[in-house]
Length: 378
Image 1: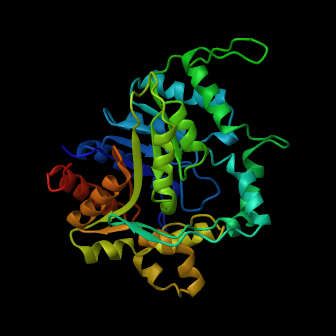
Image 2: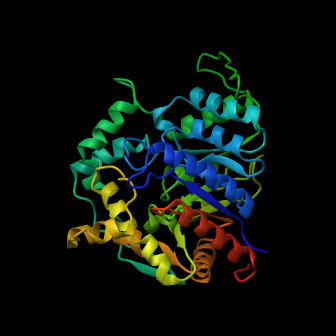
């Protein structure tokens, strides 16, 4: 029996396209993903990114639920540092009220990390661990976010997402508040009860997403919640994240044992050469993020080929390029099997971006057929 495959989508805007194009493509892809047999369909939260349309996950998830029938839909992840617990519960409770039992509420601490990033900008980061290969899985040298933290856009990002003077609460406290509001057990420090309508009693699943063995993994484990580790964003920290989650895990009403999802960036085509061509703009796109400019509209292969790369550019994206799985269905399925086996993942979360929507749909179709075809099994 194969492990489930799921999808993480950013609603990418291709060069020459619009946000409307991207969102229509996302709705179409969700319908097709349901046909292909994917287990869940998550959307990310990004802001001030010219090439990403998934700025409001709850709104998009409602549209996805309406456009599909059975596939689970959810967030990967809501940046709770920029919202109150009540606003998150009400938004997702509203979607659940119309589509009960299909919604995943994935939470991330990106909002809380802005203070940590500010500290990074003030000091010299320690030397990174060297790259290594663990049972066939590349664990690259860690990327330092210190330079990104100095970006003017990064500072503006925080200012525009929060009211003046507002501070992000502790992530663990906010997770507990969300869980209490969903369960109907919330009490203020003064003992006053609050009941979210919609939201209280919602039939949704709470998830934690993380990129390292830090607070996110600890919170997920200690509260007995499912956890998603980001190999596609921070591949250097995936093993520490998985290990920290399992070590911290305590059985809960939600889970008796840990449940780990691991993400991967994937492009599949009929053969390796075609897949590599379709994936060729990825480096330029990652460069735009890591220089602090925000994700650009996803380039075409021809536009990417015209870029003149410097050694600094190459170093900036090296870890992400080395851990992108691009190839034929068999090639990619074999690499996903290694990722699954080394991390012990119960499920894999695949994210694919190509310039042309048809190529992205075809990538998911080919992968699903190969995965379910029995050539890659447990």
